[in-house]
Image 1 (tube, rainbow, N blue to C red):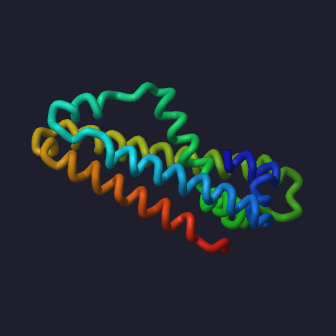
Image 2: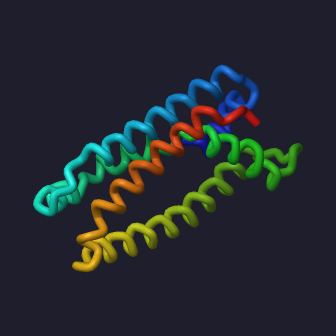
Length: 157
């Protein structure tokens, strides 16, 4: 989303408009707090943990990832502040160059996230991790609430 928005100049709106930035920032903060509270409220009994860790459908994973990305104003600011530095201001194909650089960024990010997901799945499947699941779930829930609160009070750059 942000790559396309940067390529057509829409993400510059977040940098130029304090209201738009604040709206996306607060929506993102609320979403992080919601996920954190959901993790804190979910059952942690061993028999409930296996249900809680049931695989999510690809659609659910996609929707969660989509909203996490779109509601993060710092990602948009990255694409309007950092990525354009690698494209000449008077280049005839500026949008195409931004799309290409964004695709390279996405490819690298996807490869990294696949490795993290693979490692996490392997770790979660180990018997030794079973007792730590509740602690990890609570820690991540608390961290997400903290990140949401911090994002809500972040000043616009």
